[in-house]
Image 1 (cartoon, rainbow, N blue to C red):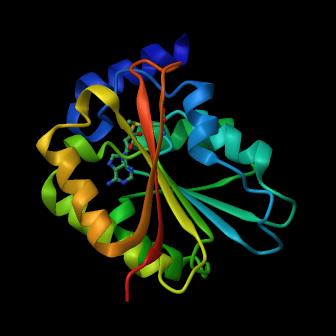
Image 2: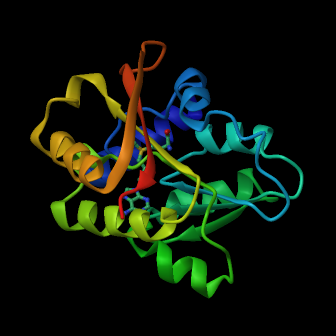
Image 3: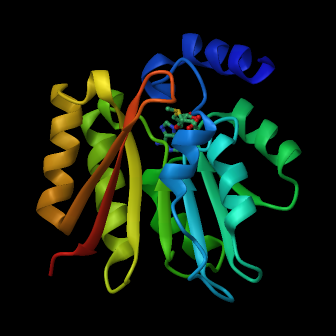
Amino acid sequence: MRDGLGFFGTFLRNPTAVGAVLPSSRYLSRSLVGDLSHLGEGDLVVEYGPGTGPVTSVIRDRLPRGARYLGIELQSSFCKLLSKRFPEMAFHCGSAGDVRQILAERGLPKPSRIVSGLPFASLPEAVQDDVVGGLVWALEDRACDFRTFQYAHAYGMKAARRFRSLMEARFETSERIGPVVRNVPPAFVLRYCGVRS
Ligand SMILES: C[S@@+](CC[C@H](N)C(=O)[O-])C[C@H]1O[C@@H](n2cnc3c(N)ncnc32)[C@H](O)[C@@H]1O
C-alpha cells in the first residue's frame, strides 16, 4: 500500500519516465523474470527501471549462488529506496541507455539476462534508440534473452509499436507471453533472443 502511494507520487511528478501508476504485481514480476536456474558463477543479470523493487525481489529469490545483479534506475528517490530495501544488491542511479559505460566503469561483464521495466510506450524516441543500441551491444554473442513488458491497453500505441519493430529488426526471435491479467493494468511480457548479425 505504502509502495503504491509512493510510486503514484513519483508518477505524478514524472509521468513519462515512470509510465505506470502502480508497481507490478507478483504475477507479472514472476512472468517477467522467468527461469534463472541455468545461470552460474559470475553470470550477471541486469534490471532496467526497478522502481520500488517488485521485480528485483523475484530476481533476488531466483538468482543462483555466485550469480550477480545490477539494477539501473533513473529516479533518485527510487535508487535510495532500493538500496535500503535490498542492501545485498547493487544499483546504479542513471539511464539504462548508458549500459555500456556503466558496466565498464564497474568492471562487469556483458549480462546473461536483461529484464526491463522501462515504459517504452512513453519514452522519447531518442531514449528508446539509446536503450535498443545498448541492448544490441550487451546481448550480441550471448545465448541470452531480453525480457520486458507492455501494458495491454497501450500495446497498439505508436511508441509501443515503434519499440517492437526496432527490436524485431535487431533480434532474431521474439515471443509474446500473456496477457498477465493479475496486474493493474494487464500486461504482455515480451521476450527477444539472438542479435541479428
Ligand atoms: C513502469 S515503471 C516499472 C517499475 C518496476 N520495475 C515495476 O515493475 O513496478 C518504470 C521504471 O523505469 C524507470 N526509468 C524510466 N526511464 C529510465 C531510464 N532511461 N533508465 C533507467 N530507469 C528508467 C522509472 O523511473 C521507473 O522506475
